[in-house]
Length: 362
Image (cartoon, rainbow, N blue to C red; front, side):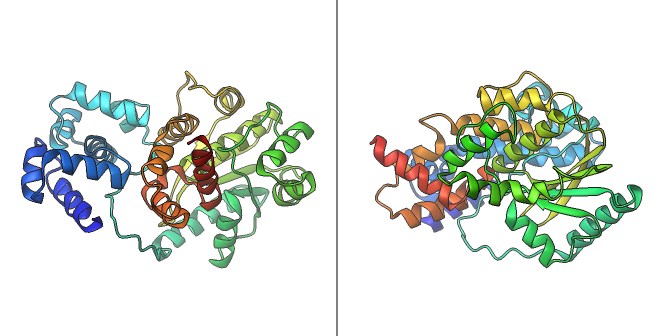
């Protein structure tokens, strides 16, 4: 079945910018239109129409940032009937208009071609490693080493350490998963730590050892001229990033902040300077009150918030996938979810919790 779906994906990619016809796809595959549409959604967790929209719009973002083509030309080249239709699709996905993105091409979540091949084996491209080292040297030299790098989680921390990317600055992992469980308004207060520990089903002492201790040695006890935040583009990382930025506002940090958007599969990185001012309100709106904020956001953060709010729904695309694949073992479901929904950035434990909750509800 995966071979059939991959054949469909390959055909769709070859005809991505043409007037799509489900009938032509079904004829090429040798199955009915209904069967092709149904199986694609069942196996991939996304409709053909949505997959095509995400791919076309993402590819158009590359043209916007890397060429001088007129927006109407980019729209038509990427299969849109008008500039208006293109702008609507672009803003719905990235939260900004094509023109605004071209003027300020901030980080966004990528949508690569879907593959049913589950082999991973990603290795750090040496050019990306050198890019990270160059960024680190620039920051270190400019700020006289009074720099703290905060990395999203222990895995990224250890990966940077093993690749000898630590430099002369201070480094600390942010070992949290803010996209799951409740939180409170005052970040790292006693109530915050207790609520988060309860959610993670660990003792307060364990939570403090895992999450708080690495920050106590750096962020909580030293003053820095510059803080560099190394966080990925998925939803998991974006909720953590919002929390760290909100904490810096909460504590009135006055230094320079850089967000280094890391594509964790390739370690490509995009640097953006962050200006504080609205992140604490953003944290409260999204992670405490659970609603979409009415403020301008980086595309990658906008995408992460949309995914987070989708995840909070009882009937979201993750639970739908679990419900329609209950004939599979938990191991198989988790493996498939990790492969098909990388934009969420969730891990085994989070997916197992979703499986358990879905089965209890049923």
